[in-house]
Length: 146
Image (tube, rainbow, N blue to C red; front, top):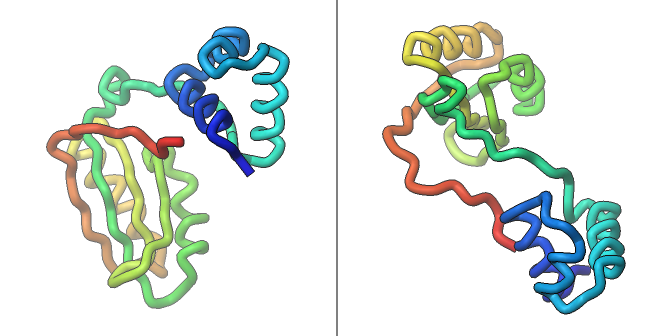
């Protein structure tokens, strides 16, 4: 179970995962070893699943973001997810409730690349339909807040 101090530590690490334990300790009134112990416990308990770099996708030429709803009637969404894992342009893949069974978030260099990617996704025989929504502007992305 995490407490309020753990939440503060998580919030600080979310803003800067390279922050030193001593610096975090000053902000939460703990020693560096105490912060280290809490972080290790949260890693062990899978509260912290990993550390990452926030990359500006536009700087890599991947300025086009889209969400694709995928429908099927022939297999499990987990089978579709296995098929989709081979596409590095797909950032997220979720099983969803409603008219469709899977939703993905992807990035592409251009509308032509997006079109070819959608064609490749549809090649999986279990997929009946796709519906693509192209993002015009992202106002914010923040992930989960501790």
